Amino acid sequence: MLTVDFTVRGHSLKMFSKLSQFGTALDAGKEELLIESYFPADEQCKAFFLQFTN
Image (cartoon, rainbow, N blue to C red; front, side, top):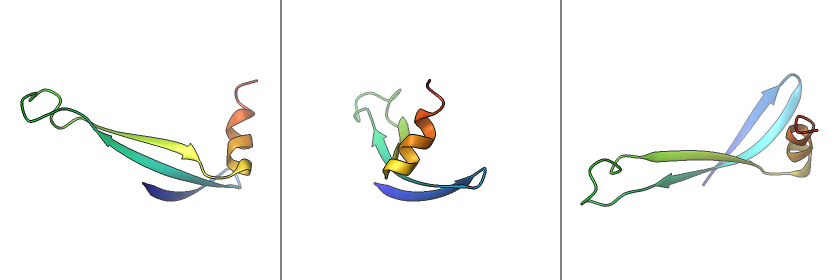
């Protein structure tokens, strides 16, 4: 898990990033599949993204 700070349109957004790797050594197609997901780390960041869902 990594912490990341972004500045978007004057808003300071604190997020954390989670890296997930899938597959096994027997599944060559998914062996190198890596997904990075971002999540809000505080209420201010969460509120910023929630304003786009209404």
